[in-house]
Amino acid sequence: MKTKRHILSTLLLLLCCNVSQAQLAEFVNPFVGTDAHGHTYPGATSPFGMIQLSPDTRKDGWDGCSGYHYSDKVIYGFSHTHLSGTGCLDYGDILFVPTTKSWDEKDFSMTFSHKNEKATAGYYEVKNLGGQLINAYLTTTERAGYHRYEFAANPRSASIIIDLAWRDELLDCSYKILNDTTVVGYRHSKSWNPNHKVYFAAVFSNKIIRHRFDDTTKRLFLAFDNTLEAKTAVIEARVAISSTDENGAMKNLLSQECLRFDQAKEKNLQLWEA
Image 1 (cartoon, rainbow, N blue to C red):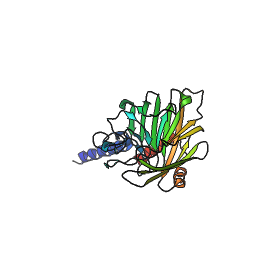
Image 2 (spheres, helix red, strand yellow; image 1 turned 120 degrees about the vertical axis):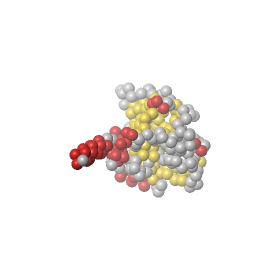
Image 3 (cartoon, one colour; image 1 turned 90 degrees about the vertical axis):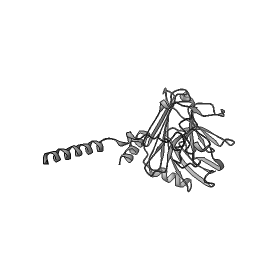
Image 4 (cartoon, rainbow, N blue to C red; image 1 turned 60 degrees about the vertical axis):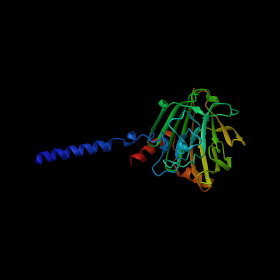
């Protein structure tokens, strides 16, 4: 009897060791709840983090409360705040849109396929957006969102649009380009929350060489100094937000380590595994 107990105890200890050594995040499926009336989003966030960085596929309607619905066929961009499971339409603040299109275009939505999507705890990616060979990768830390965009076609035309009027009724917005890599701004919107203010600070890996603000659509267009010899342009961005002011957003940004995307992804994985 004692021998059987010892064997059982040993087996239980070995089982516990194997579980503790496995990365539990790989068993998480963020797409659960993104269909039907689940109202969840598949994007990246951190435990108790400020940012919910996720793709936006739907502008309105009850099934678009989280900004994403699995039945949709286009992505409009990637915004930094999302509600999960509430059944209330709100957030979707500070939408980033990677594109190689002319800035004179009106529609910057991008078709996508679920076979090109991947999501785990704290990480999201989607490839070949809109047939433009644009790949998007998202992750977060506690106070910042990290974007990585790859432009395999037309790298010289690679741009990022910051859409300050996305989805909710816009009451006011502004932006400032502080230097050749840093943009700050805010948007004041009305939806479920009738007085919603979000301030942001964004730092880019590449120098901004040209910009334009469309006062009608409230879109800020940014062109970057991409390496012309490279076959693929890569642009990374680190973004923080605040509900207080632009200084608060900048403080949140500076409170995080100046990590490159892969470093932030690994740090976020460790946060989820802790």
